[in-house]
Length: 476
Ligand code: ADP
Ligand code: MG
Ligand code: ZN
Image 1: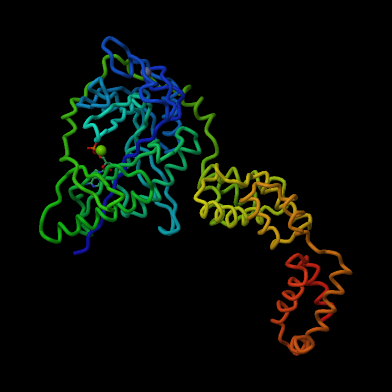
Image 2: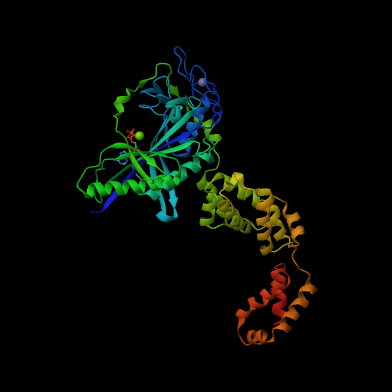
């Protein structure tokens, strides 16, 4: 029997506010344990939460970017649970009336051969919990409440996703968009963007969904895709054996490349949700939405179309260059002073991305800044160096961060474009290779690159290929 996976993703994105959602404690990462705490976020009795307005504005921004309907009135609820890292004994979240609903995200992926719209069920705001540090050597656990009360939005997708690859595409797109709109730093290692994946399988053709498992602890795109593939296999094996999938929460272990059961599924009502009496209903009027709308930047889809028309790029190239806001900005800054925008795009996509990949760096960490890259490409445009030499210079820039002009001088890479110098070199080359000249004139035009190669050898790769081509054509 053929099975089809059904997948829905829940994303927790930490919002980039300076302060927490219900108190004025800093959200800064990496402070000493419990440095960022106060009576509100440590759950002291008698204190009152005050909603951070910026959190709401960021949630509205995310809602607009994902085509959600924003509810004029929404509420905060208490989700009751024994949380060792949340001293109040409940998490303030939005349950019955979230801030936004009914959105979608168009995921375009080459692999899917087009665009697919993935429904977004809801976006709601909530506070994060703290962190337990297990000190096994001394058989004790410590609690750090710095993260307690840090604002999150949870973005819940419809079960519209049908493969691990589609899940990856959705996740990458959502991640890119949250960074474009600048509401989340997207740092997956620090937990700023986390994913829980709900997965079930069903016989192809069946309408009803199967029983799902929820996978937690997926802190990289690769882990999500691997974990989903594993889960599909695991469930297929169970059904093929005639057994039943049980609804449960499972933990992904990236070291072992497998998941294991963490707990059975607790029912929603076990949380005893009820409206938080300390917080009034939240009213978001049209004026507020309009203000946020004005702050919306150009989103990936629009940027992609603009790149195609403004820089004369192919759809594929524009897709790559707009895949993250950092890359798009880097490209535009590099291309700005240059005549040949397409050339700039090619260099960014090949040399820059290649270098970052080998060095395992993000664009923000690039040893070659966009400004320095422009300077290098300007040296090609003004004829100072040829593309060959530019590659060497780029490698040097990545190693030493030196100015391209300095490297050109140090390495003696200036392009040889002196007409008479090149002319005498060409004539000599032809003299030295009479049989090749004969063969060329007899119709073996492929030998042109042989002559070009000889001259490049003589100039140690520095000849201006355009001028050499001209002189060769005249003399052959
Ligand atoms: P809970 O709050 O218990 O996690 P939800 O109804 O909010 O449950 O669903 C959470 C996620 O699970 C959503 O992304 C939804 O699309 C997905 N989902 C629900 N049912 C299934 C199913 N049978 N198979 C796969 N995903 C599912
Ligand atoms: Mg869930
Ligand atoms: Zn606090």
